[in-house]
Image 1 (cartoon, rainbow, N blue to C red):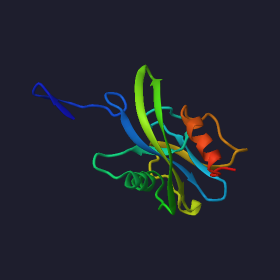
Image 2: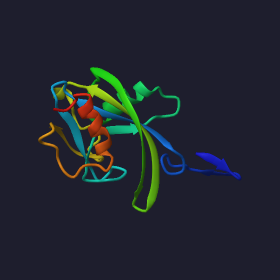
Image 3: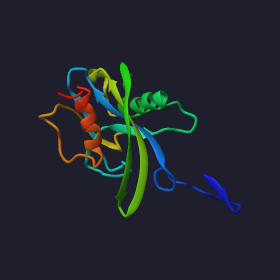
Image 4: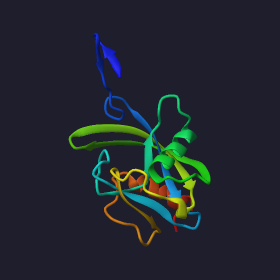
Length: 155
């Protein structure tokens, strides 16, 4: 929130200024990648399959943001984490231009501990390999999928 001429104005991340987020390729260490189907409460691209992610809060360390988001969204601890890459996401959605910087991590979890922590935002969760990817996929999925292949996360 910013004070402008004696009134407060809410600024939206990714719309009014560049948003910075963490994204994570959650995997089981055996070549399977976890994706979630975006529910009706998700910000955008409802009904599309996506990797996990979320905005970094002011003052929050990047790795702490990854751990927090995974705990909130999937109710499980992080076993291993590695920073992989960053990419820029500029797109138009519902008539609105958005601009984000995404910091992508590889995160290994125990699949038996994964639960849907945000049922309004997440319709369902699934484990996939290269041959079983669901459809439709999030508009930015290809950017992280290439990284998953290059790092042998998905087989």
